[in-house]
Image: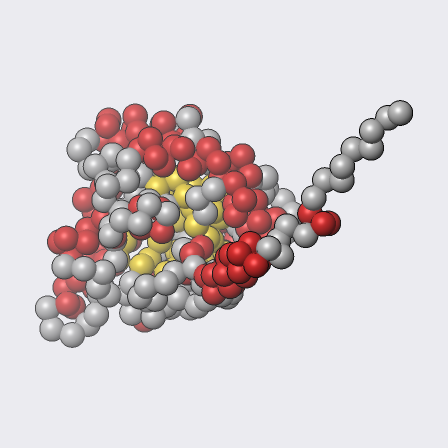
Length: 278
């Protein structure tokens, strides 16, 4: 399947074959093209762009038009990966019909092949409505960034101690509700590995973990975390596979030094003078 186009039904086949799903975020043409050619299965144009690209402190201000803008860049780059677009805050919570119009724009105008939304039981009817008109939906439960104010920050969900045991049961119910509503996959974020494993075992649809342990059917990371571009707090579940922030800073400093010293541009970087004809 390495060179074949990845489509929504392929994820279920990957789960059945116990072939792990590799998913990354991307927000523009160059990185989407790199990831697509590297064999990434799923590329998510996440509303995380509010924090990673726009420099905001949450995903809440991201608009539908901004998501469509970034989706267009990513979908132009991808020939293999399945491209999913996040539904921003308040584009699906008001009503199922509102969600239908907005999800349709992500697909029709942005080129997304599926959409992702946050929540469990509370959004199950919305998921069912979207699926009924053949809009594939990926769910997202656990630490849901659009709920940052209710959660009091980006906190691990579903621990078993004390009152949090009820949260664990709710997450199991949320996953079951999304599957019953027709979601083709579910992101599990910020929960104990044991709970991620239990949900994965109970679900007939693939689970994609981010801070939910190794037993999920796949994993997703934000590209800026993967590439070492994140310069603030790095969550426990992140592994940086490169150090591009340091490399970029060193390159910029070397460039500035050579400009100031007159080293750049050198003769090989200049166009030769055109010979005058006699």
